[in-house]
Length: 121
Image (tube, rainbow, N blue to C red; front, top):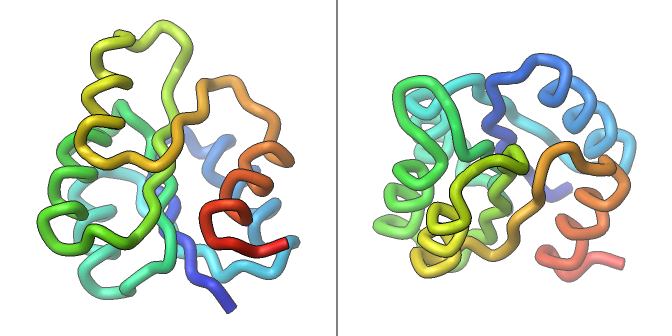
């Protein structure tokens, strides 16, 4: 069973995505802020990370930097509200983000992107 770390501070999105991914057979561990997300990454060794860009304590870019400093192989999907700066999204890709999903998004689309990055059909 593949393990996904979901870092999101909006409770509705967090619970919706967790439910959808678990329904698809993934183990989902959650964090509601950047510090907790980094801690969970270190302790849980996930197969994939889905993180919001705007989070309390550490943002998605800082989380991505932290992950890439430790592991270049774990796929990272960035979630971001439509109004976020395009330059921030480009920065995330330049730092090694594997995918970007603008909010609002269809949870089924996110599942497809997760499966694609984990090479699951």
